[in-house]
Image 1 (cartoon, rainbow, N blue to C red):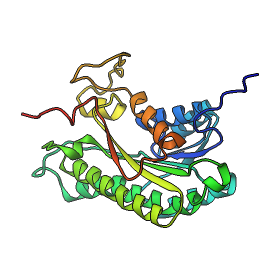
Image 2 (cartoon, helix red, strand yellow):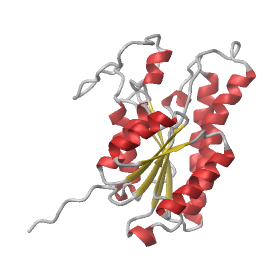
Image 3 (cartoon, one colour):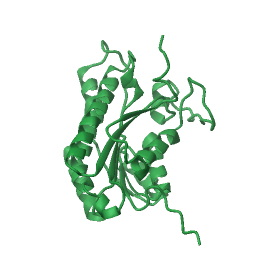
Length: 263
């Protein structure tokens, strides 16, 4: 008799930042579909609760730039769940302006949300993620940070965003090596999405108020936008035991954009 097929992250505890919409929402849904108990965090608390209710998860308010809020959230996670297996540092922002137009406070805002937010998430999650393989019987815990292919190319209108995303990629490597050297059983990787059809991309591309485009299934043209599920599938893979031999990498998820010669 064939037993029930379990999901790829069955029974794992996952926390996603910026989980109320866009990529974060898709990540929450995909992880939940594969058996994880997902904690949806966001500054938009009502939206976070809506996502959590739809997937049978928890929701918590979190401004990723606030150190005390991170401490409070991790304390609550430990009390409710006893530990954490998957952390997805997804929260982000982007303001389009070149270096001559970009004020210092906008530059610092990008660093605070992306770099500081990711730093704080990793720092305060580590105590809850150490040696989880001894608890869940799998191949360890997984941190997935959200970088961007924008950090690999010279986009003139987003210098603050590219600097922040480049910082995430570099920090990911450092955290991965530290956790491995300490024997924590925690992998740390980053994804570098290309253009994905999300509310943020819609706003910055001048389509404010329009419906999000439906991204078709099947092979995509070279200049096509991807769908949030394209990133969520990679988040699931890196979170799962299937990725146990992948550590410290930044994986482009961009339909070949970074591989294509630029003229």
